[in-house]
Length: 148
Image (cartoon, rainbow, N blue to C red; front, side, top):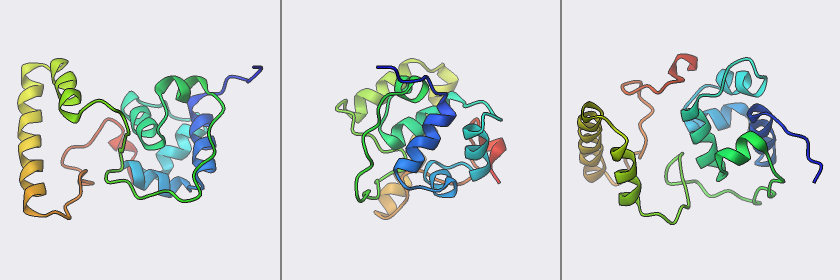
């Protein structure tokens, strides 16, 4: 297969186009700015691992596919609104995933995660319509400096 290697920015642009999304729509879906997406696609800013994970989970591709490419499946005719902007169809249980994450954390990080998780559960239990992922700047991620 003589496919030319593309960078992650080109792959993101290709996926975004296949799915019929503007930079603004994709930015809103993963919680960043359209300027950051433009900079990633144009190779003006580095792609952080956290952002790469967000793109991968949104589009349902692996990191290897994002960085090294493959023939993409066509986007579906209609895309169902995900329950979370970071939806995934992995067969691994959520509890197992949480344990895997926590096993890599320091004690201090575990304490912070516990507080965030308890607060999130309180909100979810109070309102069934509460968003899964907050768009507040209270817990900014590593690419928050690129938000508008």
